Length: 99
Image (cartoon, rainbow, N blue to C red; front, side, top):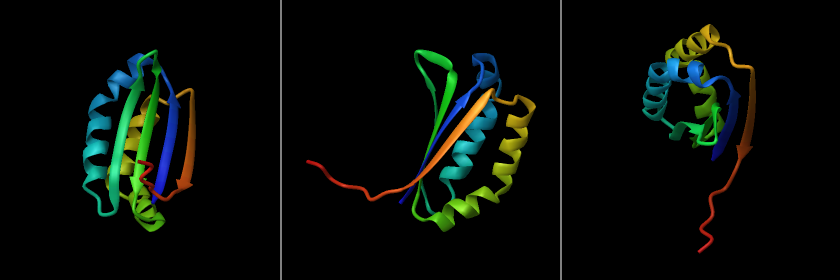
């Protein structure tokens, strides 16, 4: 499984203005083959911080996602309200059942 964790530093106003683009991106990404989860969230104690968590079956599925139309449209929407910073981390993981 491939997990992507992204932290986007922006403003509460810019995040709110992107709500429709975020909703479209979540729905379209979740419908892709190989996607287990694609979720945006705003930190409760820091509403200018947007977190993105993705889970993909394979690296190939993630790479196909990067070339989709909805990704291009989302990047265009984000480019209209560029964040102050963005940190992306990619992990190859194995799910475990600790209990």
